[in-house]
Amino acid sequence: MPIKKYHKQKPLTLSLPKNKSRLTYKVTKPRIKDVILILDFGSQYTQLIARRVRESKVFSRIVPYNISPEEILQHNPKGLILSGGPMSVYDKGAPLPDPGIFKLGLPVLGVCYGMQLITQMFGGTVKKSKEREFGRAELFVDSNKDLFANLPTNLTCWMSHSDEVTKMPSGFVPLAHTLNTSYAAMANRNKKIFAVQFHPEVVHSQRGSQILLNFVYHICGCLPRWTMDKFIDASLKQITELVGNKKVVLGLSGGVDSSVAAMLLHHAVGKNLYCIFVDNGLLRKNESTSVQKTFKGHFKMNLSCVDASQRFLTRLKGVEDPEEKRKIIGDEFVKVFEEAAQRIKNVEFLGQGTLYPDVIESISPLGGPSATIKTHHNVGGLPKHLKLQLVEPLRELFKDEVRIIGKHLGMSDLILNRQPFPGPGLAIRVIGEVTTERLEILREADERVLEEIKKAGLYNQIWQSFAVLLPIKTVGVMGDQRTYENVIALRCVNSVDGMTADWVSLPHDLLTRISNRIINEVHGVNRVVYDISSKPPATIEWE
Image 1 (spheres, rainbow, N blue to C red):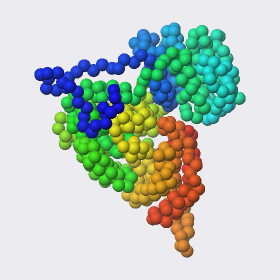
Image 2: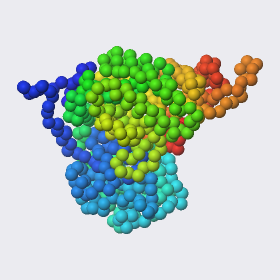
Image 3: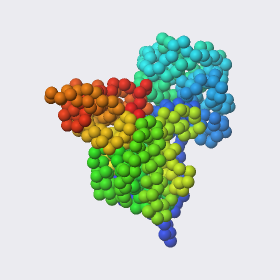
């Protein structure tokens, strides 16, 4: 489908057969010749594997770890990848795949936990490591073919494990090691089974994408046929088939996720999309005005704005626990949204800009046992009585993929390159109780951070840059007066997908300007600090 087809502000139109009053056609999914199935054992990196595979223009699909061999064959895959997971293979109730998957003759790649379960299921030994490995490690490649073809003999890899393979199964040979792990990679070439203890899907693993590409292209025999324009084509058809001429409501925040979701739905259903912007009182400065100007003014979408700031602040009064904040905001958002939607007659669908990272960090969506890190307001927070059907066209995508789609749809870089902003807004950047006064302090400080980052030409080079209001006060001196005021923390990180992140080393003169402006211009602040922690072990947000 030509990209120019999407560069319209009006909905896509299709020719109708004679004597047909509405669009009716049979939707067929695009024929996908090359598919890699990823068995999800609960790792927070599972969707990263899917993303890396898709980056090689090969379609990947995530399925539950306990999928049957018969169900696997229905997908007609070229290969299987077994993800990592939070458990030990020797734990009671540890997730194990159907042994029959190894009898299908398909190439298999086990990652971290996937390597350990392959070891155990084929008669090897897995034990608790004497020394845990978390973070970067030097990888020594013992065999430069197959998985490590065309790669150097020394690489940096990303480890995250406290168990290790102490004895390989019969028929397996070592492919790589680290100083602490004798078997960092292994293979049974006759059975086409490969395994790595590290995480090649994580950006910190040097040439990790090449390792996955070697598996997908050379071992599985896939060809690069999957592209974002094909995804758009399929999504538009699926949305049109699902929704028809019925109405959809969508909570539009102005962020990349909800904006691209709105554009996809707008192209598919046109004026049957009703966007609702909820001002929860937790937004950045002038955000409400900007959203209305862009989507109601420029894109000519149906957009209603609801000022519910006092409702949210009332419910957040006295609340300090970050998870409780998220749940309250999510609950209130749904209530406000329902009330606004009820004013629109005959609505049957709820659109959301849910992305893979939202799902990963909330709950494993496909049966995996991943632990909950934090709750997202648009995942798992919908009440059981909600009668609207969900439409989540971006649910399987990462942020950079969403930006590509937005570009195909003709959206401006001002929207697409907007740094991520959390659904709960500034509430999770006010550490401790959220009050009107504390929100205003943070809002003004955050505005100056963004202004200086943009002036320095660094905004589009940084994944996220923002201010955090800490729950402490410190002594300062302004003029001849003693002060006892608030502390602002600066947080600037770079990331590819939000799953891992490194702090940004900002120029000292820029840090000086930001600090001076905040202290001099924002009443109630006398100290600015800079957060230099990475994810993991920290998170990007402070809450």
